[in-house]
Image (tube, rainbow, N blue to C red; front, side, top):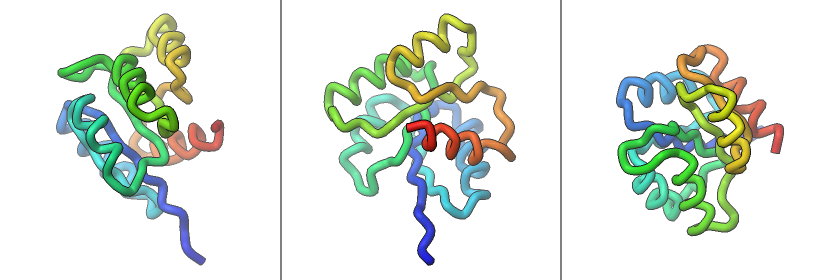
Length: 127
């Protein structure tokens, strides 16, 4: 039986966090991760196959904030893949703003690498 691969686009400018997320998700055999450091790179990557099943967005990117990135992706692609925030910005006002932007949810930094794949699967099930 073929296993469905969950394609993740990670938008994270910190190379250490990007590496930890990638390693954590690769511990699960059904994840494939492409990491990019900027919002502009994320927008450009959406035209490359395979299309992500979910986008994980850091809110503090060097070229735009995560909510602006979500708006830019939606403007460029009305069938935008689902997205969630992976961020240290976890005040209630931030959380409310992320959810209002259409995010499935928020994974707070620091996160538990061991449970990250489970958290991402749970976000995808909520769609």
